Length: 141
Image (tube, rainbow, N blue to C red; front, top):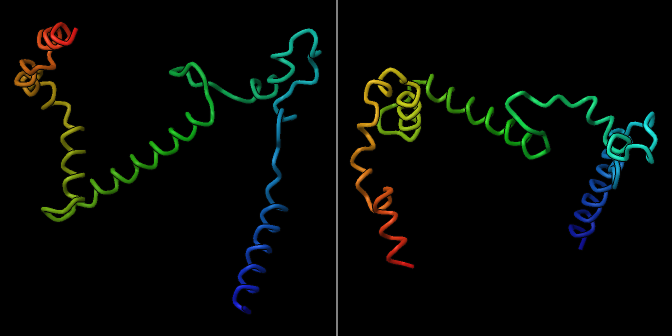
């Protein structure tokens, strides 16, 4: 019984600590608003002007949101992990070595350019090629 009370006390204290340190903004975030614009004149600028002013959209994107920011972060971390594994020269036969070899083959653009389409030619005659795909579609229809 004493353990249960202690556990509940710890859980409650942790919840209270998190509730006090992490303010939550519900609905429209005032920091994203532009109060210099009248809401009746341009609601979009009024509601989003602050966000638009401080957010830079990269030239290779059409927009930014939480998911694209998360994807960028994850991609950078994964690239860092793979780069570190590739530089570490892992032992033959290990999973890390497979990753390092795949990364090295991906980065070897000279070999890729010299081989051109040769690696995929055997697959071009598969049922999933253009001609095979048309046959499959017409057989199904």
